[in-house]
Image (cartoon, rainbow, N blue to C red; front, side):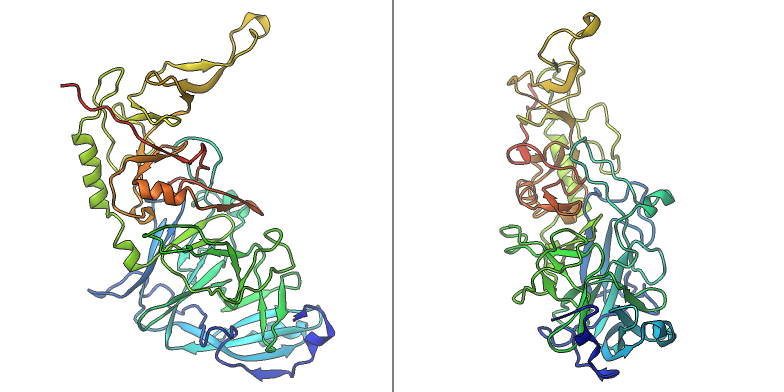
Length: 472
């Protein structure tokens, strides 16, 4: 391996024709973006070929401000009318001051690797008729197919407020998501394999890896590198919908190679190459962009998940059972799926430490144990409640039905809730997600509710709901 700035990095000839791949484990990993980037993202044909769907974690069915165009919580990728993929073609060694001149052809896709102030390597790409390319990032420019902004995860709170999806410019200025974060390449012929690569092409069809970016020359004389905050991927250890189990988080390079994680998110030293793993997405693969995490679902996997119509039927079945508050004896009812973050009078609430479901009441607060406060004031309230059924003390929150069907692992009855946020879904779904560590910050991981991003608490991170039926 040759690191940036070394004398060995300057030895290759000025130009060199590349083999079809910059990843020797994959015969043809095309990259690219499109001159008509959004053709085929939303299908016009009656029976379009769907490659898969991307779902942003932490949004319960839609962004807080609503899904608008390319800025949304979920996007399906379809076969485009015309292929827009590109693949590596020719490599050039040039003087760094001449890079801008070498990249003046805006019809040519390229990746520029700055090795030092005096030397750069430019890899040109050519059109690939066998692949479709989809780009993801924070930029709202036309070459980005899926605009993703930061999801506000939380280690506390109830219900899951989400920030950063498109309001003020302040959020964008502080975002840790790259403007051109990553790209997904899908083969246009069966089995329609999808592969992920770090970084995306900008409006000039270029990718720049500056002098400070982690980059290196590979053993076969080609170039590869990592983006500043990295693109992390975790493939499930087994079949996502059968026996969900978390895999190992890895980092994906610009050329699609797989590496162990760096010591910190933006460290310049790359992790160890993992040769027996690939950048091929599978049902349940997670993609972390350092600020938002995406879930990849295949068409086969989505067939096991409930549709909005099925979720509405499950809601109606819950309400038809006429669950009652065991204290007030009033009938409880889950609000409509369209009514989010607005607590209804009949909405069920739960004590998350025991699972007993009640109607809302404003009593049962536990006081802090200890001496009376200064001036003879009473001890402050902890904000936790004592369940009148079993006397267990803990958070008391409203229950919300999980509205994003793509996050479910099956279409089972909504019998369980995540703790402490109160999002309700099937038992298999809560068990599966409570085992998955999601990236947080530069090197921390924590299980979280996929519907709102709230960090899970308690021994299991979820609770079985205990409803009381009608007394008549």
